[in-house]
Image (cartoon, rainbow, N blue to C red; front, top):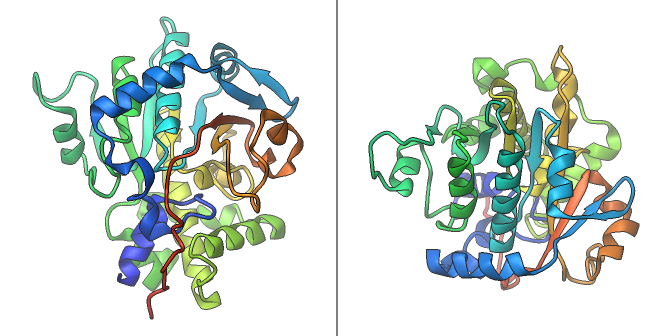
Length: 330
């Protein structure tokens, strides 16, 4: 695996603490068919939602969560990319948020899965054009994103009249950032990162996430360029969301964290921007991770305070992504 592919994979799975970048997308439920996802959605809809408001520790229903999120101009929804339960849960939430708009202009869905400049309109470019074809034209890489995992999210948004807009860096941009630094950022993003530097605790948290995401093998010399790629991706998502408010952003959990994710970049903007963030987490993480075996574990564990709300789902089935992983030589 080349360094370029490692960087590209890092962007795709940012925030998957404990899941290494280059293998997580092909793990677990990545091979599910559309019928499998619909069956899973039906099963998920029968279970009571395990949604926790972190500020109060209160358990919420889907309807209550949508009511709390609706007043915000930018709603950030995280995910573990290979967990189909997360996409099914977010599809239901997106539908609820769309319905909450009533006669107001609909949300726009800003997605990590498309590059900046890519878009899909609810009405489509031509009658009967398959969704996947429209996504590919907008820059979607269906193999990299293990299609059809994200299909429920996209279809839920389009059914509510929401256009999809790409918020990720364009293809090849991450490698340019890694090699040549911040000067290679698009003009629209130039100068903004320096206006929102991370405080030391957040910087250390990001460093740890990057190292953990590469099975502890990330050389210290690569931390700074890796941080730049991560921060630039967050900035691209935020700038796109501010262009298309009211907006719902879907991205990896690492991108929506309040300590080093998208919310940490708000000081870069002259006008105030309000965001709210929902982390989607698994109910049975390994014992060396924060306890998620019950909703009480979320309420009491400060590790999850990096989100405003947490939605707990079953875990995806996956092999140990660090098994046999070797960091490529520079």
